[in-house]
Structures are given as structure tokens and as C-alpha cells.
Length: 462
Image 1 (cartoon, rainbow, N blue to C red):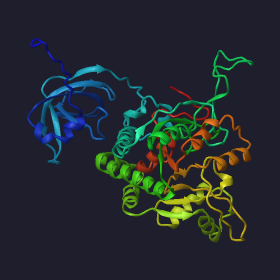
Image 2 (cartoon, helix red, strand yellow; image 1 turned 120 degrees about the vertical axis):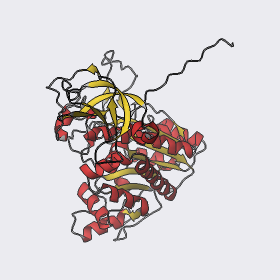
Image 3 (cartoon, rainbow, N blue to C red; image 1 turned 60 degrees about the horizontal axis):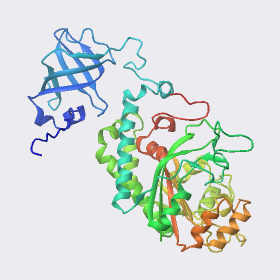
């Protein structure tokens, strides 16, 4: 036993660590590897900026006038040198002074498409395999990564269990019918692989309800799919959803939890991704920081659907009770309330999915009985709808009546009805579209720019 040798891998230092801990590293020999982001040759000295993806800020490497004369932009190299205080005007800056020639790892030819100039996002989408080396998508990836960690941390800290719900399903949670059907090469007209029609999931909510009815607090975080024939800046065919599901809550609890969750993510992103958020504020949306800070400092508005309709009608929007609220109308509502997020609650039952809990009897302005459901849509500035949620119908008879009224196959949803038959409980939750959230916290206007490899109609590269 005494002869056992423990082996540990020592991770090489990354550029973000150099920038963060530079005072402790001044005067020390450092080895870094990365890609060349800039080259400047002067009469007696030359500089390159090296990046490794860990930070929006690269590190400057200093050599003599010929040190980088054969080096190409975009090449990958290894550098050995001493970390010193910059000799330039910025006394806070640091740089690495070469102590030996750099080692070329991978050369980059002049035809490299990501040259050091401004590129349109449209162009970058066509080179999605390379675009992450640029500043905007590189920063987005770090924000996306930190957001993922924070999502899991929030739910872990609050007693939730992460449930991996199936990607292949036989049900349609949203009832929109815009699903990708799965067909196996083994399928025939008489026989299907799963014994029934199967689809890529549009939501993990229904399956999450199973576990909320046994473990009280659960959440899913995974890919979902919609076969919408739409190529707008707001639509993807594959995207990620965060869906907590909780037993023993009512609509007010659901509203409070959603607001707390969103503010937790934003607050911690501003602290942990400061440089990247500041980059987006400077280069993408100069109102980003002020909008995020306002979101943190102000209670969200809670607006009844009927009051939202009246507000829109009073301001000459063509809308009536029972209509969905369109994108431009969502924008008007958030602008009307001073760019503060707005929960629109208690929508008409007729335009919402079957699983939402029906409210007690309500009437419209003409005393007509109008069934509504206990639900919420969160509208945020620049993005529109960010969160959709509800209390689920936990009453067996009510749910069965709705399934029958909508012409759904009750046998297919027998398991869902069983949750109401055996020890039913009030429960609910919400779904937050991860990519729309990333749009909100980065200011990026097109949803195709906040996912590593976008999937949408007529596009399935890589």
C-alpha cells in the first residue's frame, strides 16, 4: 500500500486565470496555448494577441521585430515567456515577454474566413464551425455555459430533483400538431417500431408531472423540437427548455418562483460574466446593462389578461377577448409599463393547452361566462414571451371533460389521468426558453446566434 503512486493531472493555466491573477504571476515563467487573434509588427518590436476561448480578453505576447514575421492570423501556437507589466501607457495591463521562439501547432492559410474585421451575423451563421473563435459567439458560449451552471445550482439549492424526460414521445404536450414524427427504417405500413406513432418531444412537462407527484419538486432541462415552417429571428426547430414542476403550489407561488429564478440568473451572470456582458452592452445593445439592472431592481407587473386586452384596445390595437397577444402587442405592453417584465395571467381556456387548471367562473364586460385558466405568460422587453406556465388541472373529472371536449384520445392520456386518480395534488410549473433567455441577457437579436449549431427550416449543416 505504501508504494502506491497517486497520479494527478495538472491543468495548464488559461488566459482568463492570467488576467485574473496577474499580480501573483508577475515575473514568473508561463506557458500558454491558443489562437492568434491579432498581429502587429513595428520597427523594433512585434506583438500578437493570443486567445484560448476562456475570456473575451486575450493576452498580449511581446517579441522582437522578427519574432512573428512568418506567423499567420488564426494559427494555433504555444508560447513560453515571462509575465511582465506592460511597457505601454496602460499601467494595469500585463503581457508575456517571449523567452524562447513560439511553437507552431497549426498553421492557418490566408483563406481563413474569420479575418480580423467586422462580419455580419448572417455570414457567421454560414461558418458556424468557425464562428465561435470570434468575440460575439465566443462571449455567448461563455454566458450560455455559466447560465447552464446557474440553472442547475438554483434548483439544487432549492431542493429540486433533475429528471431526464424522454426525447421520444407519443404525446403532444402543447396540442399544436407541429411535431417531428419518428420513422424507423424497420417501419412498415402494418408495423411501427414503437407500436404507435412517435415524435420528437415539444416539452418534458407531462413526464415531469409524474415525478412532481412523487418527489414534490423536479425540473427538466433539455432539447425540444418544433416543426414550424418559420425562418424568423425568433424561431428554431431545435431549442432547449428549462421546465420546473412543483407540487402543492398555486398561481401566486408560481409567479413568485419564476420571478425569483429569473432574477437569480441575471444577478449571478452580471457578477460572473461581467466582461462578456459589458462587451455585449458596448457592441450589441447599449441599453442592455440598464435593462438588466432595471429587471433586478423592480417587481414584475402582474396583469390580468382581460386588462391587457382593454389596454391594447384603448390604444387602438385590433384585438378582442379570446385573441392571442401578438409580438408587436407584447412589445407595446412592456413599453407601456416602462420596460419592466410583465406577467399576463388568467387567459381564456379556449386558446390554451388542455392541461391548464380551469378557474372559477368568470364573466366578460357583457356578463358572458368566459372560462379562463390559471396560467401566466411573462413578457420581457426586446424578446417578448420568455416564460409560459400554469397550475395544472388536478381534478380528474375536469381534466377528463376537457380531453373529451377537445376530441383527444383519452386512452392515450390514461396514465396522465391516473395522476389525478391516485392521491392527486395541486401542482404547476413553467417553461423558460433557454435561447430566448440568452437573447434577453446578451441583446442578440436573432435566436440563431445564441445556440452553438442552429437547426431550422432548410438548414441542417454540420
